[in-house]
Amino acid sequence: MKLLSVIGLLIWATLCIRLLPFKYSASLMGRAGMVAPRGLNEDQMQEASDLAWAMHCIVRHIPWDATCLIQALACQVWLIQHRLPATVFLGVSKDSDQPVANFQAHAWVLCGQNVIVGGQNVSCFKVIASFGGYGA
Image 1: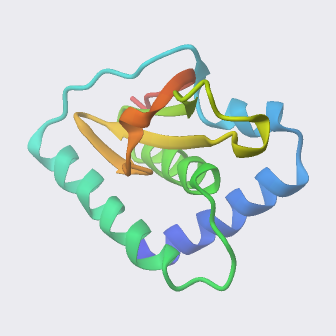
Image 2 (image 1 turned 180 degrees about the vertical axis):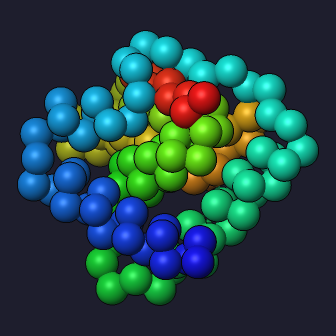
């Protein structure tokens, strides 16, 4: 069941990111500038881990490019719906010597102490925005 709900959220997030102004999509990620609490109990940690696994499996097999921002939006909405505290971070590459043509941006979701989606090389990015969500 979790796999189907993740697929549905990825479709929805893709449409939001591609068709709607970012201001609307950002409002769905949580409160701007907020960082959610990082303490999770054992059941919450397992739920977040299961979501990370489902997202990883599905993204490799869907027929469209689910960017890190699409994955972050889908993941955050799922976590909020399931009352898990999480934060979406948006970052830009730290290398200020890069020309604009090589500009890199990235989105990732932190739930508890774990990066659920977008965890590759987050230390290479400077956080420019955060959106905290807590469904309690």
